[in-house]
Amino acid sequence: MTRIALDIGATKFAAARVRPDSPRSLEAEVGFGLGAVHRADVPASGVWEVCRELLLEVAGGEPVEAIGIGAAGPVDVTAGVTGPLNIPEWRSGFPIVDSVRALFPGATVRFAVDGACLALAEQRAGALRGVPDALAMTVSSGIGGGILAGGRVLTGRTGNAGHVGHIVVPGEEVPCGCGGFGCVEAVASGLSSVRWARSRGWRGSSGVELAADAAAGNSTAQAALERAGTALGRAVSSAAATLDIDVVVIGGGFAASGEPLWKPLRAAVTRHARLGFLRRLRVLHSEITVGATLAGAAVLAAGPGADAGDVPEWPA
Image 1: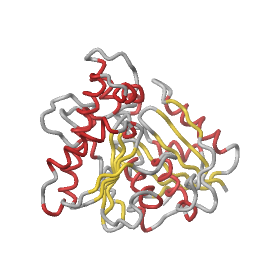
Image 2: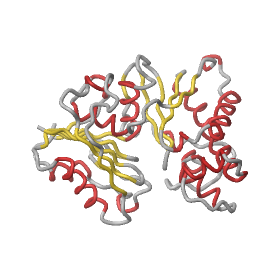
Image 3: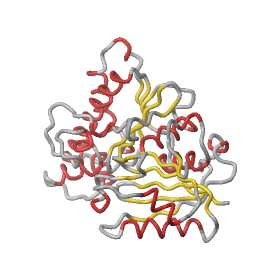
Image 4: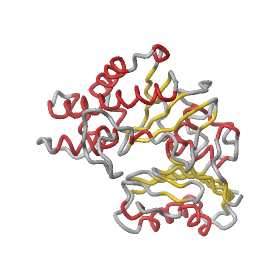
């Protein structure tokens, strides 16, 4: 029987089969127990149709036993609904679990916000192996996170625990897609940083280009990454003090922007994380390159475990 992992991102879908020996293979296998990864861009309309075709392509006509889903939030895990801020067609809430169950009747579905999947992947085979209390963050088109407490992934009342992209950073009143102002996602995500740089005359169109231009000495690109890194460092400091943790691991495409982002991030942490219990706070770049949300979804698809927190299963 086939098991599938699905990552619902802000701009892309990714899906793959989970190999039969997962999750035990996750620590040893570079591929996190995943087969070939299939990807598709999230369209402006017909979003489910694209996701559906991707899942059918991965399934290849074989019976599907279980599916693990990690989705950009916010989510309502109990209801099986995702409402990613950056997918307008789904923003008011899309019944992803019911839709997947209708596509693969009888399959067990386990669903979590992307940050929880990120924390699972980092705990299983990344920088958080053996770390009971920590924060895992993704900095990409958006910003999300997952919390480890006592060795378990916290899910929270609705499944959104760890949604750190909406920590408000001081000195910023930028409108956020959530309807608020000054959220770190509105300041420091890849999309937000590109938008800020373009408003100041930069002519690129992606976070990858922004990072490359910053490394090449473009002053606007450097300013954009300094602004993003400072905001991230402030958010990390606040989260670390709130959670009483001494390890934060950050992954995601925009987090790979190098020293123009990480130098101001570290400087902000040094300035703001001053409480005694934060003296040994470490902020690490993720070692996972396969796609941490998809890897965490593979852990969900492989079956229930004590480290998966209170992620519901459908059918119960």
